[in-house]
Length: 60
View 1 (cartoon, rainbow, N blue to C red):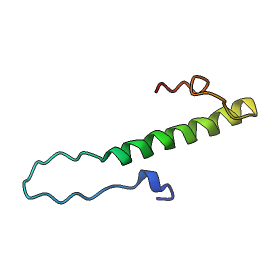
View 2 (cartoon, one colour):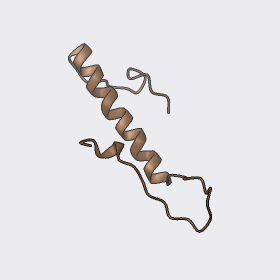
View 3 (cartoon, rainbow, N blue to C red):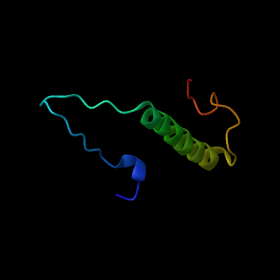
View 4 (tube, helix red, strand yellow):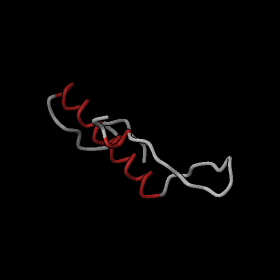
């Protein structure tokens, strides 16, 4: 509940069974949250933030 990035979505559709497709912007937000949490883990483990995505084991 305290993590806004984990909240659900409501999609209104005229037909049942319509698959939810997040917008491009939403996919970018997920990628940024992934970077944020990986940076926190990296700093906790190494005492510094990572300088590259390779250090975070994130592929572009």
